[in-house]
Image 1 (cartoon, rainbow, N blue to C red):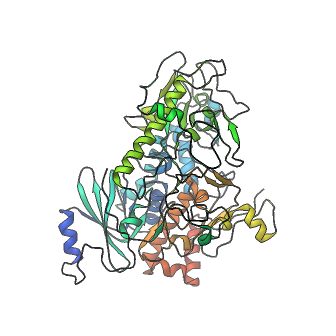
Image 2: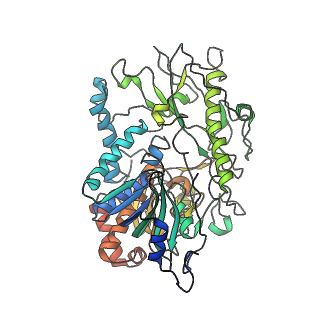
Image 3: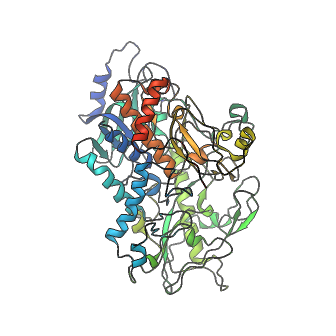
Length: 573
C-alpha cells in the first residue's frame, strides 16, 4: 500500500516542503522530487471513476488539455473496478441524466449487440438489459463498461488532449496561497511523476486530494446542531462511515463442485452479528436482514438458476436475480453455461472498521477483513445456505475471477459509499431533498414535488436517501427523497481556489450523501466539474467567481444546457 502524505491545513502559505523565507523555489523542489518525470496539462484529474471520466470528457470537449490518473488498471469506478451495476432512477431512459450519460448507456447496449451472439428478441430490444437484474435497466459486465468508456474517451486521446495514467495515484500535493501548484503521483512502472496543472479535480474514491492538499473537508456524521438534519446524531462522529463492500461475480454450474477453500476468518464471520441499533435480526451470513425502511427483520431468498431451469421469482427477493449481470436467455444457446450474478448484498457489507483517515496498518487490516467477509459469504452459499429442497449449499456456485479480472475473484477495489467531502460554499442537507421535509416546507405532496431549488444548478439527479449501516453502530437510514439539483456551490471549496471535487466528495453531509453517491449523479457531478474548469480557463475567471457573478453564472449554465446537461427537472408522471 502506498503511503500518502496528508497535509491537514488550509489557507496557509506553503506545505512544509518550502521554508517560509522561500529559500528553495517551488520549481526547484519539483525537479528535486520528480527525478525527471514531469507532466503538464490545463487540468489534472486524480481518479478515473465515473466522475473522473465524465470530467475528462467535458473538459476535453470544451478545449482543455487533461491528465487523468487511476489507481487501478480499469477506469470506470463503481461500474468497473468496484463491479456495481448502475443504480438509477425510474425515468433514466428519457430524462434526468446528461446527454453523455445517455450515450454511455446506449454504448453498453450497442456493445452487446455488436460483439455478442444475442437472441433475436434481445437484438431487437431497444431497451436491452443484458442481465435483467432487478436493480438496473442496464445490468452488465464490468469489462463492457471499461470498453465503452475507453471508446468515449478515445477521440480526446487521439487529439492529444487527454493522457490517462493507470496504476497511478496521488501521494503528495504542493500548495501555496490556497492553490495547488502540483501533485506528485506514484506510478507502478515509472515511479514518481509530478503533475502540473492550472486546475485540479479530485475524483478519487475517498477524496484523497482533499487530504493531501490541506483542503478543508468533513468525514463521517455531522451533528444535528451543525446541520439541523432530523436524522443526524446529537454529537458528530467522524468515524461513522457507511459500510464498504468487496463485490464479486458468480455463476452456477449444476452438478459440479466449485467450493472454494474455507476462508481463514470463516468461523468469525459465520457467527458475526452486526453491533447496530436497532439490532440486526441475527448473524450477518443468513437470509435475514433489517428492512432498510422499517428496520424490522426481513427474509430473503437465494435460489440460483440450474442447467435447465431459470432462477425463480419468489415472495421474498431472490438475491440471485437482484444484481444479475448476465441473463443467459438474452444470448444464443450455449453462449453462457449459466446466468452470472453480482454479489453486493447486505451480507457482505463490511461494518467493522474504516479505511479512510486511519493508519496504514489499520486500513490494510480492515481491507483484509472485508475480503474475508465476501469470501466467507461465498463459502457459506456453497456449503450452508438453506435450499428449498431442504438441503444446504449450492456447490456449483463458481467464483468468476475473469469478470473482475483479479487473482482472488473479488473486485479490484472496494465499493466505497462515502468519501471525504469538501467544506463547500453550500452544503446540501437532508432537509433540502427529503420528501417529508419538502412536504412540510411546500405544503405539496404530489408526484411533481421537487427538492430545494438552486439558482446555481449545474445538473440534476435522483435517488432515495439510502445510507447503509455504518461503522459507528447505525442501522440503515433509508427514506424517500425527491428529484434534486446539483448546486454549483457544492462544488466550490471554502478555502482552495483551484481544486474542484468530481464525484461523491462534493459538499454533502453524511445523510445527504446517501442520495448523491450513485452512478448517474456521480457522472453529472464529474461532467459539471470538467465543464466548470474548462470554462474557467477559457474565460480567465476563477471557478468561485463564476458562481458568485450572476451574469457569468447564467452564461456558464447556458453553455451546460447547450451540451445536453439538464439543470431543471421536467414534469413527471
